[in-house]
Amino acid sequence: MWYSSRVHGLGHSERTGQMSVKATTRRAKPVWEIQVIREGGEFNRRRYLDRRSCRKAAALAIEAELIAEYEAMKRPQPGAAGAATAETIEARSSVEVERMPEQIARERAPSTIAAQVPRRRRVVVTAASPTTTTTLTPAHVPTFAEFAERYLALQDPTRSDLRNKVRNLRLHLLPELAHLRLDAITSMAIDRLRAKMRAPTDEVASSRRSAGRKEAPVCARRKGGRKSPRTINNVLTTLRSMLHLALDYQLIERVPRIRMEKAELPDPVFLEEEEIDRLVAAVPVEWRLFVLTAVRTGLRRGELMGLRWDDLRLEVERPSLRVQRSVRQEDGGKLGEKPPKGGKPRSVPLTRDLAAALHTARPTTVHRTSLVFPGPLQGYLDHQRIWKMLVQAGKDAGLDKHVHPHLLRHTFASLCYKRGIPPQVVQLWLGHAHITTTERYAHLAPNAGEDLINLLVSPAGTTTPAAPCAIRGNTTGNTTGGQET
Image (cartoon, rainbow, N blue to C red; front, side, top):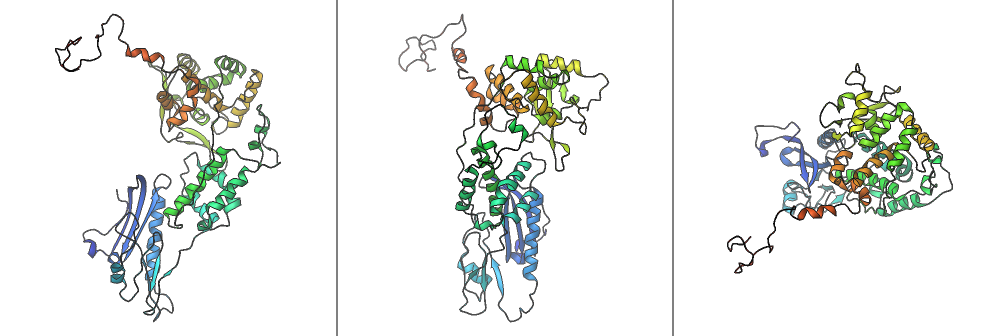
């Protein structure tokens, strides 16, 4: 589909201009294709943006920049009379940027010396004299700090990873790379950044949350200390996303090689059934339904905070709930409803005990759009209050594990695997985008599927053939009249 206005009713050679933003694919990836054509093809610009990380508004902004570039080129420069004229030649007529043949260059600039065009590089051909040579003039390349502002402005504010990208830029990327131009960010500079994040320091943690954990402190929890491989890879992923966007804008010629750390995910911590009973008994009465819902559905903290009564289906044979929103903190500290992580709603079935508890707790006069778990903060629960309540409940229950909201989600997934529920079903209930995330719990069911092998055996009371199949020319044991089975 094309998003733009173009001149209709004329052949390509008769058009005076063409502008387009097209949603297409390039190298099996969804992209925005931006193309601006003027002067019957003499001015031809084409750019690409990744549709997974850039919205349509970003593509339209690039289209406006290309139009401004054309207008600036056509605008007469002061003192340009009698001076050399210049024009920019770029590759066209192919998705892959190829070298331009010499004869095309001569047709467009008869008095110039033909030049071959390297990939993603502008070539300015001057006609000042017969002996003029071709000179390469790279466009203005912004610094990393300048491009970071533009990168963040193009991000979708509804995505949950935006705050993560802002944090990676503020704490790690900008302090090291802010002064560098984008084309000066090499593999060596990236290796220096990674080495600095590996280096430990003597600064202690300032977070009360990490200081109160029962697990032994590690260097990764120190402020400014050695970062874990997962944290380093998270920072490098943000950097790689920015460099690929700069490549789409043709601000750099290539993305330097970024080597990731070897990050082995630890086995998730979860509660056993006996520990669940102790935890539910230790929480205050007004919080027990919240904890039971978290353990029986695996909803994330924000999804529990945004759950409404009209999302529940309790008066049916198979009760369930619909996850359609998540409450997250926006800029300025205000809470707002966003789509759930992954952007897709999902349905989660309810156990009999949870459905009965929700049915009993639902007021008869409550509005159907009211929150199931209301709170004093803009009508929502305070996420810090949830965290403190679970930490205190874990201490009161005598648990030797750090209890937090996501631990209850780990517990749900672990119980599903222990009960033999297929991983694909658990993935749908948890809302994981990739099955590999769900398979972190596979070690809890090492013998899963061993009992299913008996399904290959015929049920009791039925007869089985003496031979699995008949061999051609041998009718021994063949009940099909000599035909092959």
